[in-house]
Length: 192
Image (cartoon, rainbow, N blue to C red; front, side):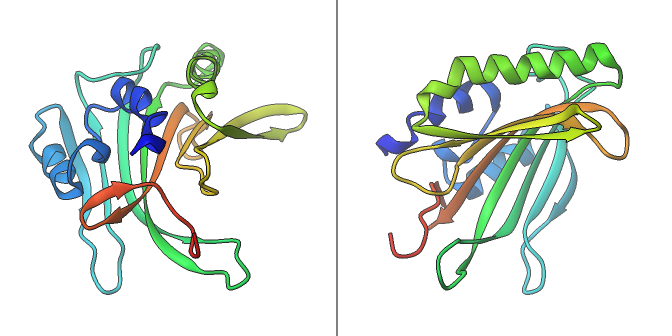
């Protein structure tokens, strides 16, 4: 699919494996068999719960700074569209987090990674949407959502910020997709 082309360089550079080049079930199996990936939480989908997988990598760091932890989270989530019916759909959220320690130096490193990523990959996408979070006049987090024409749901985002529990800084890459017939695809709102 041509619309996925902007994603490919990012997926290739930042993800050891991803669902856009294989069946979703094969993607999950590859994580289960990856000697560099340790699964810490794995909940299959049931009638009352969504799919969730979380784990950490060893010997794999796609970021340009030293990490304390590289974490991958895959979660199934509900997405409410902004249509007049407020239609709800189920999507997959995949997050790759480069978590550092606390401190000003580490904060500068994740901000630099955030800026580097946007400078290197931002123009590949049709448009982007920027948001920041300020506290007492200081920026404590920033987010870019990237869009692929003509889709209204951003398939891709980057962010930096501080984790609320540990105060560690993180640069996070988020991939949003829909699973159709066991294959990852871009999210198409209802009626399109």
